[in-house]
Length: 396
Length: 180
Ligand SMILES: CC(C)(COP(=O)(O)OP(=O)(O)OC[C@H]1O[C@@H](n2cnc3c(N)ncnc32)[C@H](O)[C@@H]1OP(=O)(O)O)[C@@H](O)C(=O)NCCC(=O)NCCS
Ligand SMILES: [Zn+2]
Image (cartoon, rainbow over the protein chains, first blue to last red):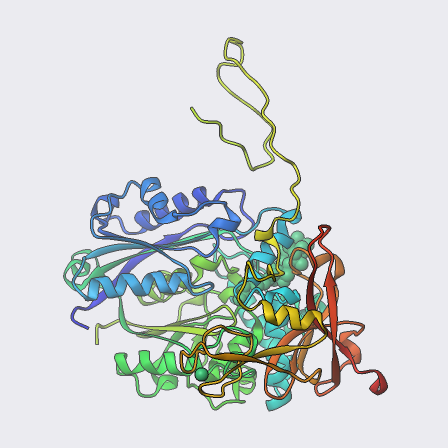
């Protein structure tokens, strides 16, 4: 890449079942972002990238990027787009901002992820129906296949192939939900014990309620800038050092490359590591925000992100190696399990967490000491696509 | 000013001019219920005027689970295609898939179940291994706790009753009789 690109800061709404519309969330998230970066205002933004998955279904509104521009008073002069890549839409938006700036097309971008998902109990089945169409609606969604049973299959296969235990799934959920108790915007701020997980209702066995991320309203934003401009604003931005994606020509069930792993995550992370010059990710990465949409996901991610061998992910959590004081602090924010998962906002919030970890501005009880290298990871849809970005306290 | 239908449950029409009484006011109605529109229907429009894989559905209607195979490169696809993703040939034929397979993975939808299915929850949804292909399917007449990986299942056809004249079909599986 030709130019270094940095995230200088950002902000977010509180997340949860909010008494707020899609437009309210976009405004709150935009304000929080500009408030957090006082040197930058709407008048400075040249590029606007909005991560949003299903505003057409959840808010009956499309063409949402210009809507955000209007709501936040941004005259976009260079580039405007909304990205949809299911659960990775926020990271995809960030990736395009990075590319546009690295390529010299613009210097200052706002990346805002917004999702409104809680429409009331009565609308929940319709909302779930919209979400289950991220697979092939005609052949997969039609079977009533929503995310929980899909990821339950991966839990079942991982247990079957590698002997991963129910207890290890619970340990992931307890870690992340308990981390979220230290995060003021999180949806679920109650500490839980591993035993609580299997006592919560079964949603899609072997997965219980506490193995699942939530249905969440929220918005998160970050300001992304070229090196020259970023240095005018802060001495401690988060530099985007690498960004990789992989899909393997498979989205519907028959065409997925694996049912107990995600080789796409391996490829995407390898791509990002190569760009960032990371040779030993387990040693070099200090803090990671990975896509724990369900507890099993995080266990598979330890493996596919190249930190341990396939099949050893369960042991990694059991040994506490992903805790705040472990080898890699994984999901200090609380992850999707604890913070909730407003689809389009998640990737942006993960990147903001890493940025704030570098800047030392997160709540002190979840601050990872001397963090200099971070990673964010999202999977999307039938986990058919994986997106990985590495961030550094130094541009490299 | 255009009228903005209010999608929230707010009922309070607070306004500063209430006392004035001179502002005209009227009620406009919107439908409180609509029939399940095709855009919210999981089942495909299956006939020749809607889809070029109508042969798949016609075969299914006759009790045969089929898919496409590429006459150029020999690749078997699932779901059926009109262009081979391996070689871009559009010279494809329909071939039969086995009607018996094994449970490769399964769960039971108990919460977060999509519209159109939530009133039949809980139900088992599985990956069925048919050898050449693996597909997702509902497993009828089964409970999660009674099943194991590798259990044999066999095909069943379901007729879709959507309250219209339209005749549509789909497939499910069920545990194979003698093994139960
Ligand atoms: C798991 C799930 C089905 C639960 O939804 P639900 O059954 O409608 O649950 P409700 O909203 O009725 O909530 C019931 C209770 O559980 C709590 N709860 C809901 N989801 C929760 C979660 N993920 N974790 C912890 N608690 C949760 C609620 O706060 C509520 O608590 P209360 O009774 O104290 O108020 C839903 O959260 C879900 O679908 N999650 C997955 C989202 C998803 O698929 N995202 C895409 C991932 S790829
Ligand atoms: Zn071919």
